[in-house]
Length: 129
Image (cartoon, rainbow, N blue to C red):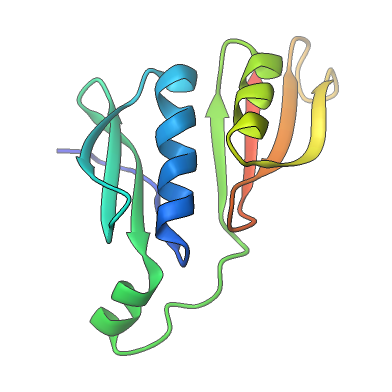
């Protein structure tokens, strides 16, 4: 049983599915356990632990009987071995660049980050340290 895993509620399920399905395997070694671009649900694991779940926002709204609220506070942070390669892979697969790979010694002696947005504008941070 997974103790923790992020679930992103997405409005454009096919675009977000295509993006995360393209970048999670090479970046984190994640494998898709369930789901397809048809939605409304998909999830990826690293080993036997969940790393990310996508769920269709409209389906959640129907389930709740209310709007689940806007995205905006969501951020997906991934520790990767090569921030530059992760950044390039994500951009090639539809991410919007926010800040290119940058050394961040003020965050830690060997810390490097890059920031992007997924197809719905959700912030992604790639980091190495």
